[in-house]
Amino acid sequence: MREVETVVIGGGIAGLSLAARIAVRMEVLVLEAESAPGYHASGRSVAFAHFGLGERVVRTLTALSLPELRRDPQDGLPPSGQTHPALHIATAAQESSLDALEVAHQDFGCDYRRIAGDEARELVPSLKVGPDHCQAAIVDHGALKLDTDAMLQRHLRALRAAGGEM
Image (cartoon, rainbow, N blue to C red; front, top):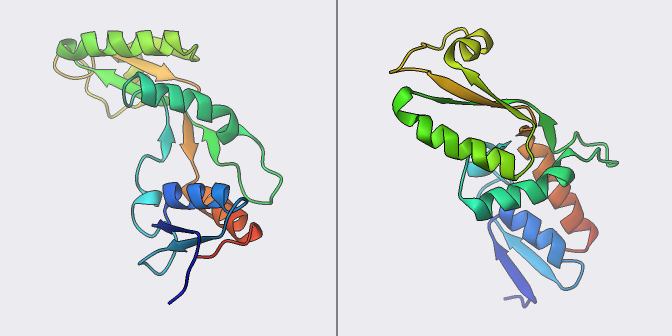
């Protein structure tokens, strides 16, 4: 039996991020059932930062996270995010949803462009174009492909540097 001030259950992105931040103030132990941090969902879940997911709260958190995710780290690990355009496509029946997504891109000052289906096919030649396929699209030039392994390793280093354990 061992007493600790704080136990964090789970060594994925959320658990390690939380643990690393609170370890500077108190004793933290991270409990993880797998053999390695982030063994399951952290590497395959939402590893892309863009404005096509969630409602306003999620999009606001995305907007607030982008500068940190883009920051060039000084720790020898790759950046957490690399710019990689996102393509959001819509059929004719889905264009109202694409209109709403365009408003979100405008609200957050995104670097985006609305394009027709033919232009989207120039970017992705395998796309089918037409009313029942890709009728229109939004290209978000500011989206980021996230390096979840670098993020996990950065959180794990910070946890250990603050005296926390996993």
